[in-house]
Length: 400
Image 1 (spheres, helix red, strand yellow):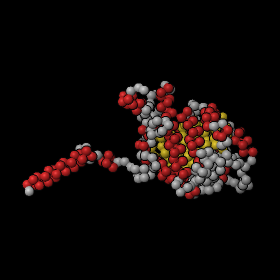
Image 2 (image 1 turned 180 degrees about the horizontal axis):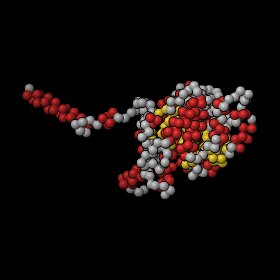
Image 3 (image 1 turned 30 degrees about the vertical axis):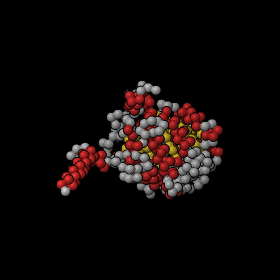
Image 4 (image 1 turned 90 degrees about the vertical axis):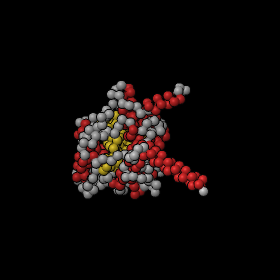
């Protein structure tokens, strides 16, 4: 009997001791580290921010410093076919939740853009009025100017933050270009991925008998308007992936007069991605500030059905991502991904997933480009996120 009691007591003691040890190992001290316990999300949980990045109400917090901000622009009042892109920012953020910011190591660039030198935030959406396009343009311009006037982080080589806009129809690019001009005091080059050229002269539009000053601006005329306002650098302008119809040959003549290079979708088959990358690089140049505008309809509807003006025969998502590697060689000052229309997307959200990944790729290449510049000695040194990893591998395994 006494042996049985002793054995039971011993088992109880061992059990209690084990629980105590496990408790200490989890908590690390008498007080739990709440961040370690509850501070992380799964891909399917948490508040919907881009890649689970920290959120800040940047428009009402002028002291918030950042280098790159995700900004939703839920505006679609200037479309000419299917509307619904006001739901685009919400859908893109949802799709981006597939990947956590802490699990975003780039498989080709070999670093995590969110754990490098740049402070990246999700600044939420601009509350754009949906019923007055003229007022909406003013709102967007003021908000974007405000955001680009924020301070950058202590590690930043930039004087002004970069914005990655989630649209919204393509008309949001006009207030963005105006804001860039106000902040930077200079025009910019343009790299425009789109099925359509969006340089339509309003006077050539078939309904020109009925028009007003406001009707001259919509998602098909924005770059014509931007050129008239002196927001673009002539001779440093590229359309890539063009395959949509136009009204007449005059539209191409008008586009030529603005100084655009058009790269058709067929050039991917005829010449390959490297030739396209070279054309873009040669036309824009490495030291010229360039704005990158990505209309999701540059992709074939097989890859991006959820858009307002789909055009059959576009690039695949892989082909577009390959051409976009040119961004790591350019001086990118802003990016937008527009025309995502969730109501027409696949059940699995293929278009939203493509758009989210294009935003991530853009951020990655902007961050990497500054690291490359610092290593070449053209600016103050920035930490290469691969150096610690390479040193650790060398220390552990030695040279091959």
